[in-house]
Image (cartoon, rainbow, N blue to C red; front, side):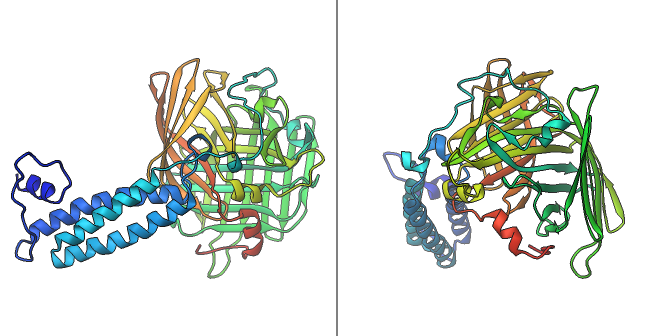
Amino acid sequence: MVFTQVVEAAGLAPSSKKAAPAIKLSKSNPNMTKVMQAVTLETYESILNKYKVAYYFWYDTFANGEIPAENVVQANASLEIAKKQIDLGTKNADMAAFNKARKLMKEADALLNVYKKSYDQFPYETSTPLLKQDASKVYKAKAADYLVLDRYGVLMNDVGPSIWGYADDGEYYLITTFYNYHARGKIIKPVVVEIMSTKDPDKRYVYLLNADTKVTQTTDSVEYNCVDAEKSFRTLIKDDPIGGGTTCISDGKFPAVPDKAPAISFSVTTTPSFSYWYNQNQGAAMMYPDIVLAGFEQPGPASGTITIDGKVATFNKTAGAVTEVCMISGAPDKKYDEYRTNMTKYGNEWYISIHTDQVDAQFISYGKFRDAGMYYKGKYIIPTEYKLIPGIANQTLTLVAKTIEYGDLTLNFEIKLHDPVYTERVATVAGSYDDQILTNGGAWFEHVFKGAPDGIAAVQEYPQIVDPM
């Protein structure tokens, strides 16, 4: 009863016809001040998260529209003053300060509830593969597909497996790799390998291999091998005669750097469950204005080890990988503009690769281009639509995809590691599909928002090992 009276006196709940007598805050009644602080702070934290969701564009700006930038700035200013009023009310047992804070928070909340759509957000037309479904050209990629450097007039951007998951040391890992082509027709320097773990999530080990990559092809394999002094990274893609796709083996070796990094090596094997093809392999798609997209992504299970400072950790059943063969170049008769520059200009990039025991999937948003593919019970499934539901900004997100075959796929992501330069993330995944609970779920999770750093430019400027971040 006392709590109810306090809340009503603060205007946080509807009062009855006969108002309860207000209980005045005072230093002689510290419990009442603590109650008011707790109630007001709960509201503050909720609206602060809405501000962070807006600031980091942790929502689908194409589907929902965009919260105006001026609203985000004004909301932040109101929240900063509101926090000072909460602190003042707590220190001086001042109801007026709590009331001022509530008013400011209400104003901030209203600003953050405004979403506007305009053509200028994404001034271009693109394919709509979720609406125009045709999987007739979709197949499990072979090793030879990695060597196709021009598909539908789109040139190769990069090849690289990226790996995530828990190991038996209890830590979660992120391993990012890139053999970069950047529409040049050949692998360019540097080859990039990055390693992070939850043991110290503020450290990122970035290795730039400034040596030529040797590419060796056989009838059923392709090998990439880059050796730069004591640093090396090798990827072998072999046709899988049983599964009909490929097996990918990745080995990296990097010596210790005094006062910077321990010796690190890894050997990981992944057999992709399926090949997700951009735009269903029906042709190039507009990624951003004047930028076109093609190629494939291959999510699936991973296994292997990582060795840090002589201690070997073995990946468990949560380990997964996505082997990327992404092709990006300028549209026909258009000058090629670096795609990351477009990402940071227009935003709404969501690249999510998922592996669970039951379902593998890929979801893609680049500006207004939306695409997805799933693999379940040996069948390639194209969702009819999907939506992103923000949770805690930069930490949690829910994805719900509708499918004709088995109903809704629901995925709940919890980010475990985040590289803010490349905006790469890895996450655990829980959810359900076809009346089943998904198990051992993990994801590679990239979100480049409007105004985010240009990761490709940034990594060129950093030393080879950034430790700590």
